[in-house]
Image (cartoon, rainbow, N blue to C red):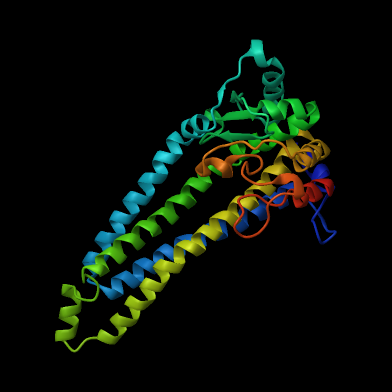
Length: 328
């Protein structure tokens, strides 16, 4: 198996460099970069905790950090366990039956065998807009949903490419990874709101710890600087954290494209599917903003010009995704 992987990987050209690398090396590099971005978000939370400890009584700081952590990670835990049900309900998905959707079920079963994962639950979304998404905290609890518009638009090889891309998200544990990242960002947001509201009532800078330090001729100036840096960090930190989360999301889309191409051994099928979606100019899929990042392409964007782009996008540009696949 490793020889087959190496042989396929030797045909993968790194976009913009002309350098050929192994697919496993590309996957490892992508995962390293996303983990580094996630670590940066954790460091933002740690920096906020340190500055809070310097600005107020350390006991109070630990209390607020603990409450923020519990709330932030509690929200992520709920999303981790119930995100699949929320996403399926929000998109209006219904269970695909063998009698009505035999073609889709057969494609999903074949791709699951190629990916080496259990057969996922298959759903259909009654919408002419071509799209799909996968959800599930691990391969044993995976679900995929495909719109009727996608089934009508794509041929079998193209549909296999899209299904493989979605199963790649599950196989790469992207949902679990993003849940961890959202938990860290959520804790930072909760900490920001608590500190800013506490400051409105005069809680910052006037705690017991500051009185003790002042009575001993302590570092009142250092406490003031820490307080200013804390407020700045808690205002800017969530913005930076959100940009990091979006960057991770775009990186994981590239990784799912590469993994999906490996599963099907057919990068061209997925590239053609992306081309057809780039040319689509019909009705859009109406879903809530909270689940748009899960879809194959962002349902809210106008894909006719090549797709969304920029640091505020959840998905990479379709033209760039196609180019990378064609370089395989």
